[in-house]
Length: 228
Image (tube, rainbow, N blue to C red; front, side, top):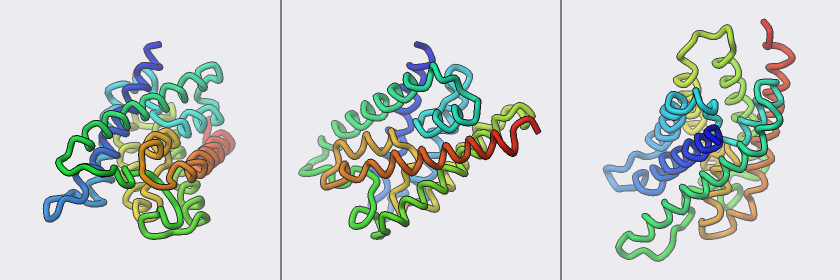
């Protein structure tokens, strides 16, 4: 239960900090943090939780990460479903709190896109479904390779959280204009529930592509890099 609570609170922090920065702070004229700020916010949520709960649960904070680690032989099957449920519930809880906050703004009428992920007309820059699928697959694959490599037994100790946090920052710098960056099915699900428009009908892609990328990364690491 300690591990599941850690994953719940860690994923809550990721969604609240990352999506919250996009909802509240990105678009303020002259003072907004913009794409770079949002990318950094997501990276910081993972970096901080890596050191806060990494020793408890591993700080997966993402169903794709848990699945990728499982495929790579670094996570036990018996814990997989519980982790995924805790992550999704934590993400949705954060989205609820974000909704309660944003709905209290003077003149509030709609949450709009609510930092949700999308393709086609729902992509920030109109990228196609195929472009978004490729982007999410490739970026999640490399994210898992970085996680598996930086946490490997022969890797320098104590630096994995930094590498993983910076990797997520880079991932967002690349892909916010393309898909608003997912690489995390729980993060996508939670925001799509509340977003205005057809975001929820597209959430399948943000489960499929990240999980597929994570599976491939797990297989690559297990086949070529493990036991080096």
